[in-house]
Amino acid sequence: MASASGVLRVLGVVVVWGMLWGSEAAVVTRGAPPRPSPSGEVVEDVSPAHRTLKKILTSEQNFTWGTHPSTTGSSGPGTRAMGAVPFLGEPTDALPVNVGSVLVGTPLQWKGSCFTRNTAVLRLLPDGGGELNINTQDAKELLCNDMYLIVTAHSWSFETCFARGDHVVRWTKFSEQEREDVQRNGMRLLMFGKSMLTTMLSLYEIYKVTMSDSHPADVREFYKKHAGLTFVDRKDEVLPVQPKDIRSGDVLFLFTVAGFEVPTVWVTGMPTGHVAMALWDGPELYVVETTRADDSGMLEGVQRTPWGTWVARRHALGYAVMWARPKAQSFDSSAAWEFFREYDGMPFGYQTLVPAAVDTMRGNLPPPLTPEVVPVVVDMLSMVMPKQAQSMVYDPLNIRFLRVYGARMLPRNWTNCTTLSCVQATAAHLGTDLLSVLAIPEQDDWRYDLGVPRWSSAPSLICDVFVMHLLRVGGALPGFPKDISLSEFTPKDVAQVQIYDEEWAQPSYCRTSGGKRGWCQIMGPVEVELSGFNSIPAYAHMNERCAALPPSYTRTPEKC
Image (tube, rainbow, N blue to C red; front, side, top):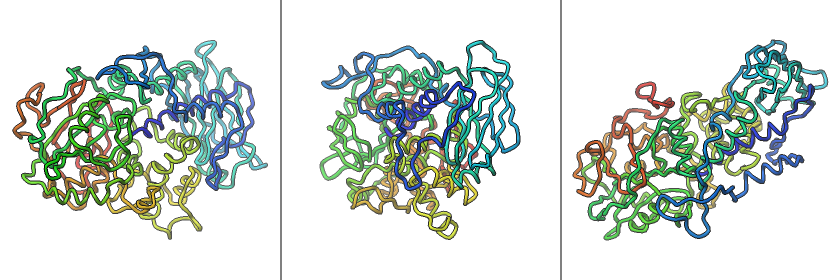
């Protein structure tokens, strides 16, 4: 989930870069923005601004605004925590909104946040380049400004308009593919809805709520405003859970008020970002899971941890843990262990992280996120975090190109994409687009190269998918349709699917608030409500085409 946080931080750098690069001069001449070359090699921008921003983004060192006591005790040696700083702007103010497409020779008119009368005209130049003229009139205030993101299928650019009149952006030369795309589809124009200062402050808010040592108060404020989630404090103690009370196959839902879980919780609306399972191996109780590495000693990937050690580690990191019991009367531990040992040590499945959350073009992007800005974020991610871009975006796109469309439909001499331009060109050749391809349901039999020789052809398992497979092989999903792709489940889906026993005899030490619940929260500094728990019966092709947006996060259509 840390990489998902990184994507939001990348978006922040995209906008900062645009502010530094955008000019108030009447004419700006530039080529395509610095970007990976067609060969996949990352071409560095020689500007000091770009080098500095990239260093900030990729640095392991975080800014420190003072320390604060941890929710579970004082910060340990060598750790730092971010003090609560009042919100200076809304994180979502940093995201642009779509104005429209400027087609060659067809003027586009709109009302901006600063200039109320704007017209854009696009034309192609004989020398192979292009020119976009943005004319701004009637400013609301003397010192206001409008900032724009200009996007094609192959590149992107910024322009900041401080004064009325013509603002001309020229591209010295398009590639053949980009020129054809601009001729056919024009350029997409997106506008930042706030002033430059407000946008800068909003970028700081994105950074503040998604960094690993973000202050819980900042994260809770973000959830309240943008996901409609509020939390009640509770005494953070571990209930005296007796291992004998736990059965093999019991499911553990985890949530922490930390920055790295913000993208998952914001997109799904469910306060759980991780799922694990309890399994007995002879006289010993273990927790099995696939997860990211952390400071408590957890490794990355598929692993098992003795119950007592696992509880201590999760409590030290301030996790809330909710314990639920499947309805199945028996669980085949031997089959579950066989499945575990087959994949023990396999890397975390970043390849299915994004596709599992994206089912539709617009129905899974919390406002004001829009499909128009996604390619820009992907492109920037490729430049500063190429490994993460490959595993989280390009690998799942490539497998869909090959497995869904097939080699015969792909461009001649096509090879696996490692750049946005390759993806955009391939999608255009197939008559589709990036998000529509990502929304194609993941299939359980697809195999990826996970970057390790042993796992050069392996399923990509994220935490919730791993647990669903264990439930299936253990016999806890009786009557489950065979055409359900478990790879399409998110932590929210695992909690809401109707497979649990809500009437199980919870031990007396289990806490219940607001009446009896189907789960027992055994630790955590806040009360967690698993909304819609155990409420959705399984059906064919479950969770493949679901839209769900804040504040209600209602799933649509029915049986999506």
